[in-house]
Image (cartoon, rainbow, N blue to C red; front, side, top):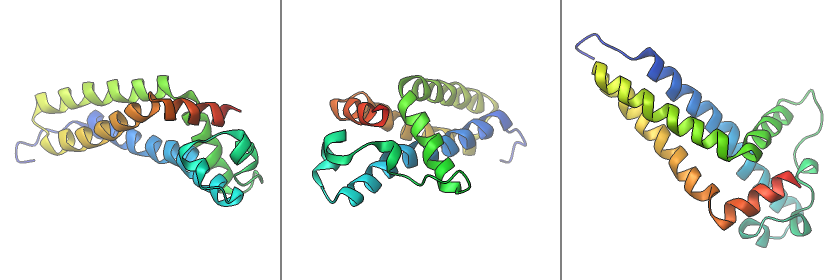
Length: 140
């Protein structure tokens, strides 16, 4: 940035989006892949349901001392919340990108466009029939 202007808030939003994205993906697709491997039924990838994959609460690690338990647990909670989390992060990303663009912080605008775009893709998947089946399985 040659102009010396930066958008600290935009960088914080991009970092928060990336962090929540890691938890969200681990709690939804990571848990799904773990359940598929445990069940041995590859059909569970395209049709996540308790009959094929079992209870998602029993899939991940269970010890509260295991950091993966927290990763899967927080991620599962975020993935189950779905719609509000996705909408909030997309709106925050758009607003922060507009602000970063207004102060001339191109690097932060690029980061925000990438992270907000990834959340937009997740939104598209979450609002399909597959996304609703995934959400129903996570909540079962």
